[in-house]
Length: 179
Image (cartoon, rainbow, N blue to C red; front, side, top):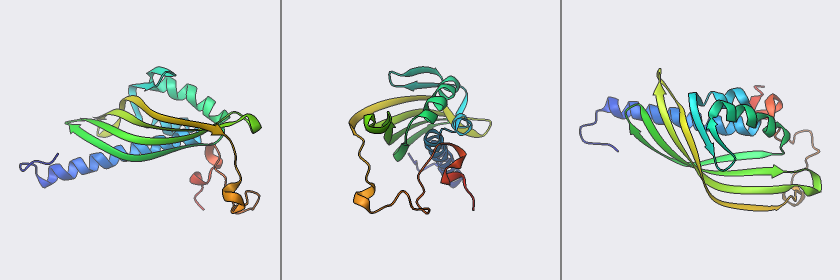
């Protein structure tokens, strides 16, 4: 919140800090969807804590190392970041980010598409001039599971066409290409 005694320099510093926090959040979403462990780890400070619902609570490094192998085996994933509210207290920031996730679980006709809405509650700290996550908790707001049915917009798109880029895990994904 801006006060009348806040200087332009203070406002600019807070704006830049908020932008860095948003970039960390975007890196996290990309890292999880591409199963990129190095990118995921770049979002956390050493010693950070991850609380991911009922599935994990502990050191973020161990969470990432365990999750990446599972993510590589999963079908498509997509994490969509929505609005983010950030409150600053010196070199600590509290960020609440609304997130929508899609995940395909299982294979073939036995697969399920799951949609989840929730909020990331992150404690960010600025250490050595870098804003990163120090503690993450997840609030789950809703979920919808359904059988997988993929016909690419009633046939509008042709997945067999050479110019159709299907997202994949790892560095073969279009997001890593620079040509």
